[in-house]
Length: 375
Image (tube, rainbow, N blue to C red; front, side):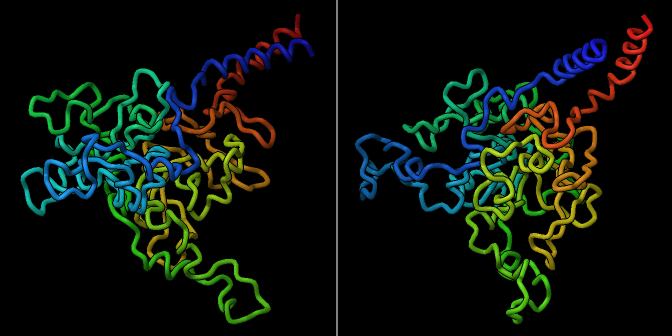
């Protein structure tokens, strides 16, 4: 019995060492929540300090003033989790990410130093974050003062001293091009994010999902599981799945109720909540079927297109006998995408080591155990 315990301890220690990681050196400050109204209603500070918000004279007009972004539809989500926020409509810097320098009407050149940063995912981080935080002017004067690209799947800042700088020099890791082509956070081709840089058409969330069971709305004796337009009033619905993000951990989205704050993110039933994904075409090899807008052309999404994130949902969540791939459970160690929790092991059922760690030590453990018992 002692030998077996020793073997387990050695394997566990080896696994812990192999999976020594964190949820990110600088955690996303608002992961799983929204910005406080006080942040976008009361900031940024006036610039210049003595300016007049509606001043008639150019000399007295404000460049920045409190609440200037408060009416933007996506402002309460902005920077809360890892995403390419500045390419998303209804956000403060979107206007800087929608045109190609010097070419009217042309598609944006994401390889250009003035636009490459638009594709980089980032999130707001605490002021105590060291080494990789970038100062932000959006809510200047508030405690939402810094953000990080390093927390969101990349090790380089492709914005600072690069955008709008005639004498820029790309640092190591830039320009941002994680898949080797296209300069996007997602893969290109069939698995690209279908709605990157755009909103979902209102027809999707107004007219879908399909009624389930069929005819339920006209039959009082039948309870509807799904009805057309059931998500139309959700705060984040028009942006849902448009770019790589952990959408289901975000308030105001269809599956947030299944991913409530402070869940055990390493549990079989919740680990998928902290995974980034986006909607993809129906011929994407890594596609996963979705029921959110069932009956529409928005029928599939992908985790893999978002920096090779493994699928830790299918055949896992709410299954009596889950069968996860070796790369699961998902956490920051997989692709440096911030997660709310580090998951060295699954929780909720019989412990299974992540990333195939225990399997790697199985032979060693058996050999050691046999040798010990023969002594």
